[in-house]
Image (cartoon, rainbow, N blue to C red; front, side, top):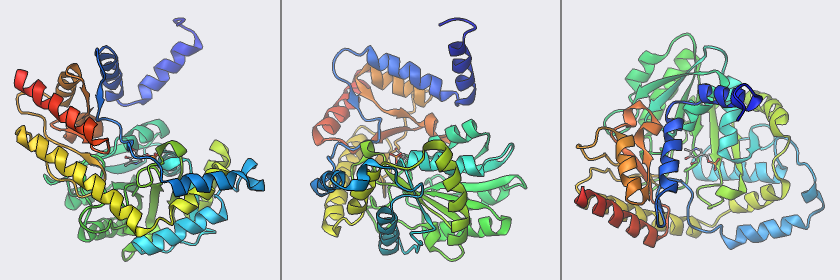
Length: 392
Ligand SMILES: Cc1ncc(COP(=O)(O)O)c(C=O)c1O
């Protein structure tokens, strides 16, 4: 790379904008690439399940349509927006007008970028519970928002008193993720109502990432948009990636009041025009999943969750049972200094997990394991971790 060339400039500006641990993850990836033998990947939240056949067939049928080769409207296909609206009303009691209150996106990743870029202004603050999904902080760093981490309680539920104390005149939004990645906590109606109270009092938006919405083990997920006073200020971010094993299809959506969607649409237009037309037709079919399909999926993930948590507990690793999603957030053994040191230790034994620091400063005594993998992979991963700890 030329020292003063444009490549060096790009590298420098990106490095400046990304939070420090991104660099460390690069170091980890390099260590992993040097491991001889096959690495057990328990770090990426991409399920090993295949997309159900009925959804694949819907895509094949969609490709035969005349409109499949053309742009859809920026907001999304009416058929997809209607399916989203019916799905959210049926499953989560949230009413959304498909014409005005839904926006199709390329996964929830893009949805988050659109929302946070739209809400951010120089010096604008965003309350982010700690630990939580890492991309909120990364995107906010990129778009000029200021991240205000608020530590969660010991059980990883929201510390709403602390959230209330963190609000300033510059606060724009509270960013939630329920079911939570990485902790597996599903926020209760009471704590969400308290957050709505804080948001109403201070005129804030609530960004609610619900991309694991159907993957819950002890009762349904609750959207703040379904609670009293919540809908007018909640922006629901969701995706078909997780429940329908469609990570590679890149389809998600936003649900929000018209006044937000009108503005998000302008950003979406500048960023990417419309979302893949045929994939939206298939997505509409996905959202009409029979209950038995979802129940089976939840049962299968639920069994994997118990296997991983019990295996870790047998190794005397403290680990709470997740209530949703397909990640768990165990504690690192006390003899390790921090989560990166422990993660590097595991990489040397052929297991890749994510260091807890990646999910916020209060995650540094934990690591994240995803359990949406084949049983044989989970078994191998657990054996490798047990072996590494024994020989240390
Ligand atoms: C909480 C959360 N939000 C958003 C995403 C982004 O997923 P996608 O863009 O595939 O919808 C992920 C992926 O791991 C996630 O865990």
